[in-house]
Amino acid sequence: MIVRALVGAAVMLAGCFFGAHPGSACISISTTFDDAFRAGDVVLQATIVSIGGSYETVDDSSRPIDTLATLSVTRVWKGHAQNSEKLAYTESTAACGFTLELGQSVILFAQRTSKGPLYTTAHGVGGLGVRFVDGAFLERYRVRTDELREKARSGGAEEGFALGAYLTHWGDTEALKVYQDLLDRYDRDADAYLGIGIARSRRGDFAESEAAFRNAASIEPSLASILETRLKQPAPGANDRWTRSERATFLLLGAFVEYGQDWSGLPLNPKCSGEGATFWHDYFDASDMTACTFRRSKFEEVSFVATKLAGVPFDFADLKVVNFSNADLNGASFKSAHLANVTWAGADLRNADFARTRSAGPFEDVDLRGASFAGALRPGPFIASGRDKKFSLDGVSFRGATVAISAFLLTPENTMADSPRADIGGADFTDVVLDCGERNREQMKQSLKSARDLLLPSYQAEQDLASQIHGAWPGVTLTERCREFLATEL
Image (cartoon, rainbow, N blue to C red; front, side):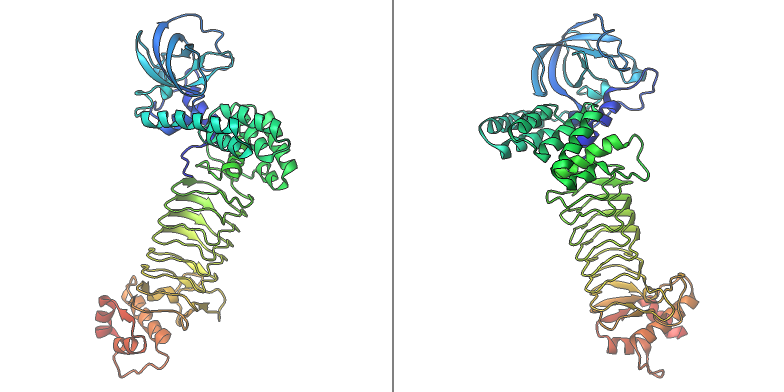
């Protein structure tokens, strides 16, 4: 399930889209259709019948309001609306306001205020803040919710929870009633309490939300992890109240809320999917994510310390400043992934797949048995700490890869060793290209001497080194630069 700004963040989204404070600058009025749809309590089409009237008692919040319009509602896709509705708004552009005209037809993504009227800023006006309105999706949503409601009325728990999950996914306020009805029918159901807690959080009822999550945990103890938030460096606007809702959303739907969230210490969720998502400043430490998929996802400054990720696919993902220290990555796949500043210290990387990656590493004191770097470009270095210790590459495949000779020579201090620091005896070097393109000629000379020691225990000084390497390792060749250097320097 791919989610760009999901249910748990609906309160935060609503504050951003619909709750600018008086005098605050409106940086941008543009938002995506998905974000506007999820944040809106009511999504409708209406004609402006009148503009004017008393707005002082519209809402108890500090939202900027200076204008009241009367709407003739012609279509409702999400939420509930009467044939005639009041819309409160501001015309101040500094507060993300907008203007309307009599007779104008508009599509609105609005919130229901505490005293009844609808409210929105320019972020909730189709064609203005929401520049692209997906009319086909709006119709599909209406039809789908009608279908699920009918099935829920005539069906059992499975059909009821299917409706609740769909409404929760799209931030529909109807979800609260659906889960309350399910709780009435199926007493002490943990998922029903989760749904109620998420819906309460969306409404800003955080005390009731936490109570619902505690009820869920009393029924299913593993759900207590919802309440154990440990945000180390929260993203702007994040706090524990929203984080609880977002963790609950993951456990209920298997979906992630992106940008700066705490997913640490969570149990296995078979419904998990993070494919194509974006994660920034997220923490997955000590969670069980073995059922997840992260293909084509983006990670920046993300922590997976001691996380269970065995067999998880990260194919074609973009990972920058990611910490996998002590993670279980046995059989995980990083095929064609972009890896930059990734930490692997102490990780279990047995049978991991780094095929077609670029500069995967460094790997220090990790278990790479059975791993594959097929077709990879300059993987490593492979570093063993301890003066007399060597990095074992037993069973590791470098088939078709281009590997820097220095990858097998670097010490923990990032200096070039006088002798090989890796044991390649059990590695597959079929069709491997060895590159000695170091920063200066002395380092190139040292690399080639070390390659000699690494590949040719019985080196014959009177014979050509490149020929001997090819003879002992038929699948190994040296780059043109290495061969030219050999002819003149070694």
